[in-house]
Length: 126
Length: 152
Image 1 (cartoon, each protein chain N blue to C red):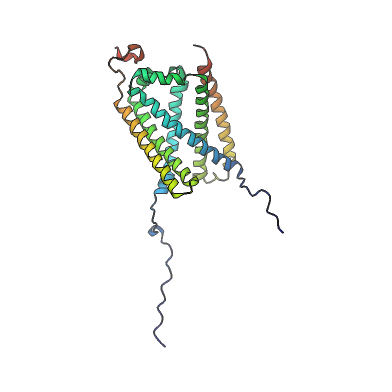
Image 2: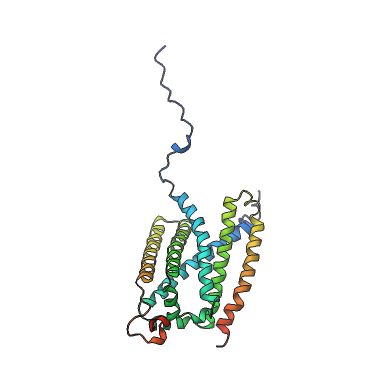
């Protein structure tokens, strides 16, 4: 009796995982956007209300959340450019794997520029 | 010999643009929109993050006076309006794709899409109204909470 081939799970490697990450970061950013428009709309109620709600965001936990949000946006942005190149550049599909590593490299550089500045604002004294 | 049985003409090959579909090209335009708006959003959102989180005092400086100061400039009004609309259409279309992929029952897909459309309309209308009806110097508010140009 023939045995089932071991591991029938689809393993798309870099292409699949970048697709997964693009979806996850996209959904995350979308839900943040809904909340972000709602909290910003509080400026229409009164300066006190807006400052009170934004004030509750100014703590280390939310500061780390903001860092995570920016990380999601930066990945989604760079990987989105990669997707466009895969679609429209004749050699895009051939270099899609290399381009993912370029995306990751640019992500690291961008976050290295952003994180120290942001974390100093979040954790630093006055 | 009796009359020849009529034989229908072979189906003609597809002739370029005369191809008939029942769904039109909406999905194609959606696909193009994701790419075009994506490029624009990279510029708009990176600019937004830079001015709000990196320039000046970063996140600490964000309060009513900061927002009012920015929206005193038509540039930031247009910037934020464009960002709101493009990001909401881009994001909603992305979530629509995800609903189509994972919600298998017709009823579930319908319910989720109704919720999605409601969230889209509420967020876009609210955000647009706020940008256009915003008063940077509301009467009776403490001056220290307002942008400096209110007391000038």
